[in-house]
Length: 140
Ligand code: CMP
Image (cartoon, rainbow, N blue to C red; front, side, top):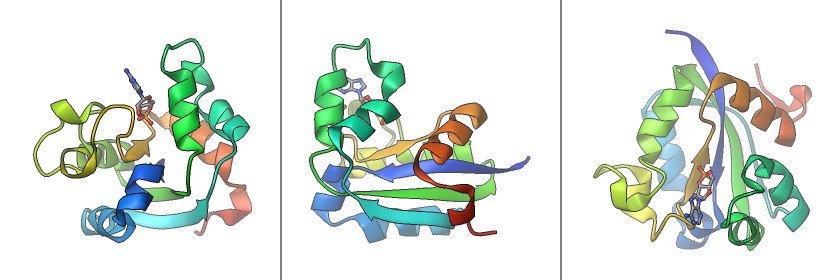
């Protein structure tokens, strides 16, 4: 197992529901360490840039409108197998398919508002972290 870094976003629905602390607690309890964090409201353009890989999808406008609709908490998590561990804590993308006890099973209404985002592989983690954080903002 390798120590990895992954990007996490608590989406506007999670912030609105007041579950930031609960979600961060799940990360820390699972052994994931915060190495960077910020609370920001994304512009539509920033959301479009972040999700550019989905620009050809029918849900792109809905997704980027939602992601820029309110504040989000963006963080970098570090730990052994951090990418897989975070995805396990989040549960399936569609909350209907998410295992009981996962973040999305507990808090998400539907796939379009699924409370959290997490990088899906090492190369996307690197790109996504660099999209939001300068190297100097990551704590060693
Ligand atoms: P996320 O892990 O942030 O990565 C891409 C996002 O697209 C995904 O979570 C969902 O929130 C969103 N998404 C995927 N499929 C759909 C869909 N059918 N309708 C609306 N949003 C979707």
